[in-house]
Length: 274
Image 1 (cartoon, rainbow, N blue to C red):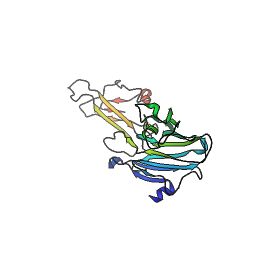
Image 2 (cartoon, rainbow, N blue to C red):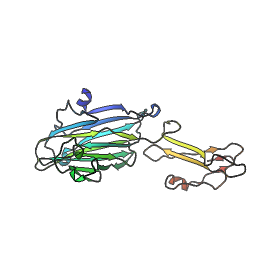
Image 3 (cartoon, rainbow, N blue to C red):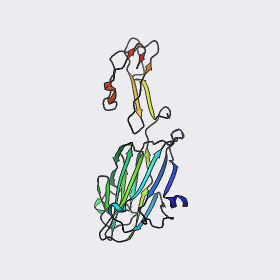
Image 4 (cartoon, helix red, strand yellow):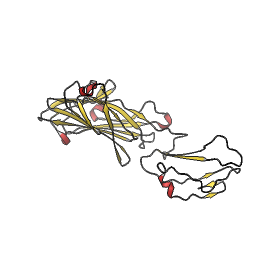
């Protein structure tokens, strides 16, 4: 709407497809250098399934950075992580004015670089940009909305924040109108079972086999899921029915997933494990 275009911000955007119990919302902001935005009260605006950003300036390199930022949060306004995927179009070079984009994410204090790939792969030499790591730079002219100027963006880790930095590399330096198009974002969320908890920590206990024979050992699996971006310390305890007892010394830890448990000395006492 008009207010969002004027403020370059949207708050509490509910993402479609998320369950009501764990709804994900997003806050979206666009930050421009002073006097660089083209018709500020008219953009950003929808362009099909994309959002169109525009600029009309002569700023270059670090002084020219426009920042498009998406912050994810849960129904209680706490940060929540998911894996985003989307596209960016308009990465071209026209009259010496090269568009540059850099895409990063954050999860807690960790910065996670996005993975950029060509949207058009059959004849990649036709594309109007080059890719280096999480950055793409325009190298030749083409339409800002066609597939040759478009990259695909994915993350291999869940993030709570997505940042697209849009800069210009100008040779010669001249004032020029330039658009950029950011596509609809899809999010891959971790399964949350059996319920949503306020601390985003989950512990599931299950028998490895469905049939437990009398007098035989039965392995119990404890699965700990931390949906927070930072490490958490938790206390674990479990009590078995009176007909079962723990077998002392049988704790087997996956060091890649639960490294901290290797240094712990669990206490077994009949039906209780702590």
